Image (tube, rainbow over all chains, first blue to last red; front, side, top):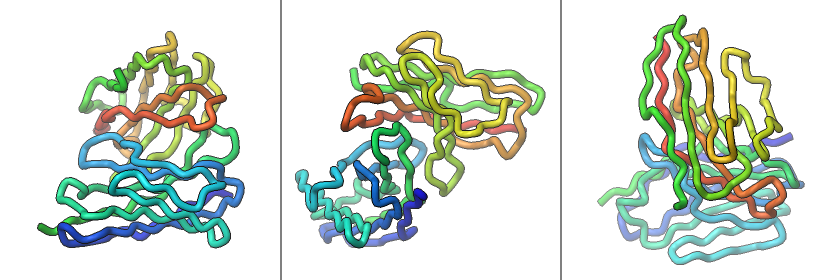
Amino acid sequence: GEDVEQSLFLSVREGDSSVINCTYTDSSSTYLYWYKQEPGAGLQLLTYIFSNMDMKQDQRLTVLLNKKDKHLSLRIADTQTGDSAIYFCAERVGGYQKVTFGIGTKLQVIP
Amino acid sequence: DTEVTQTPKHLVMGMTNKKSLKCEQHMGHRAMYWYKQKAKKPPELMFVYSYEKLSINESVPSRFSPECPNSSLLNLHLHALQPEDSALYLCASSQDETSVYNEQFFGPGTRLTVL
């Protein structure tokens, strides 16, 4: 089955690194995504990783994928107050259009 | 234009009202989606349209009726809703179902309150 789990809350100081973790259960997931949602807004895709990759870096964002443990993480370097938002991990299985979202991690950045 | 627009931004309706939510994109995407998001919860998929045909209905009650008049527009018709249907309704679009990457672009949502 499809089930994506995340911790609910993370608080970091401005300038520090943030690491948001996610676990998923469907080993046939093909793409794993990180979305950002600011208050009252829709979701913005931050980055994604294909299931045959271990790591992907995109400016301040680093995604690590451990397929054996079905663990995905998002590291934000030099976290800024503008990074405060809810971060959703999501998985897509095979060729299906359906994307399953985790419950979301609220990131609070303290100035 | 990489934007998905949704109207209205906010909607308050009674349980006997009929209303519609609208979604529009001009990116040439051929797959469009409706999601429902309750407070402090992740988005839950409701419907998927692919090439203007309904391809996924996640067992949504019939008081929600989707419509895709053309490849750029997606509507959600609402009738006889319940207070528990109050939520943020998000529309999204993606290139098409055959796209390997298939990034979904989300609109800002319509905040619906049912009294």
